Image (cartoon, rainbow, N blue to C red; front, side):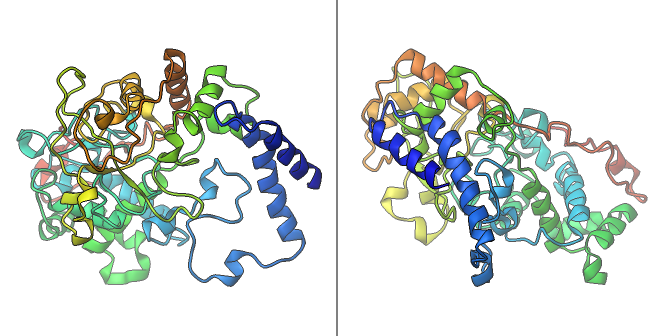
Length: 422
């Protein structure tokens, strides 16, 4: 191991240029094996680990021997729920049914899967999602929920601290589910199947198994399970496949280097959750326009985090600030940005290459994205897109259940569509 450390230092000394440094080679050749060897040495020496001295659960799993794997993180810590319970599998299955069941909406036509469709990477393919009863659209684009658990807060404006609170926002919102828990529980209590499933999933709660809390909890358990780090790029980094397109290699080095994407989309989640502790999720002011037409630019009026409703976010520099979502599965989750303004990854890369809104001439005092142009060549831009496409990984594309629980006393409800009508 000492030799590997020495070789790593020697490689750094021999390759000091920021733009030409081969980050992918260094990651595979030095970082990954050293990460594993250091952990193995720690265990063999019998030295206590962070788990032995810290009673507070940490987002990182110290016992993971890989960086690019779901084992590197503890989804339960992010979700603030117990995923180690022997009842977790039953809770996940209950949550899956509820996720695809439009019975949770006031008109029995909208489900979580209406905006988060598994075959589209748990998005809906629209610039902004349709609103309840076809009354226009909701305020923002629907981001993927794959790997979304790895965040400090949820929604584009960071207004929900937990997945359970995020679910409540959707339930109460007049443009989304437009309902409340009194109505939802009244419906669910009319299904013998749902009663049985709640009793099984929350057997430790007896007569209190079927509650609003457990509706949101089971949904959160399901959402937390939608985690995967098994894209072609992950497999290559882990050494499970021998090679990958050279454009992907160049794209990763650009992403983490010259293009500066990795300064906001942190590896290995490639979202805004900040290393090395991965406890804070950033928002950024990018200067997103209302249209993709660069000749007639107007700043999107959505104030983002500043308008979240929390006094903590009322600082001027949070105006137009939005959560940094993952670029994993970006190839199947178009359109992009909080308002769905860009239809292709090429357009997104061009936006950043131009320095965001401020770089294109918008008056934006607190833009956090550097407004100077990146001067990326067309080939470099294409390499960035190739890298992001290599992060495609959706093992949940066929996750919809074959049937939903029945309602014995209300046959009309049994005709509801799995995943919702729209």
